[in-house]
Length: 180
Image (tube, rainbow, N blue to C red):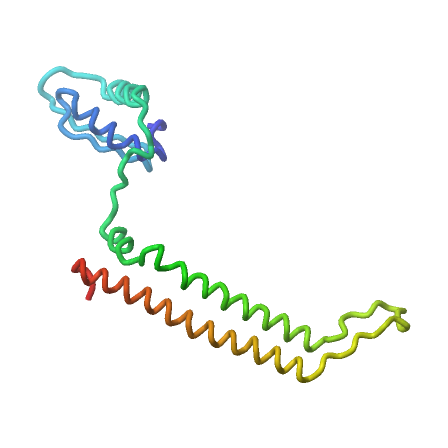
């Protein structure tokens, strides 16, 4: 049935509606393929299964099925992964420090490129222009040490913060009886 393809929120209500019809023993809807399996009793009145599915779908749509109202059936793996992630409030600081660490490494790279080519590109035929004074060795060394020290400090704290978040998540799993 084209009407249910890629609409998993219609699957369970359609199955329920079909099972309410007398004579239907089992109903299974696959929203990925659009197939509907209906097993019915040979005893009793005959009925057109296709028309029953169409009428049930029309009734469900008329009631206004909300895709967000349907509970998503989660797998065991999904539940374990969801429980094993640390709470969002615990991840803010590690993410911030990680971002700062990568920013400092990017700035280090820019500084090195700038230190290697201090004069920049000079336009052709501009020999009379004022030349930039090269940076002193003390300035280059001091800025390099400052950026390198900041990078080391941020990497250390980034590692510690992520370890702490992981340990907290592991402890929560142990408390729930799921971890090793």
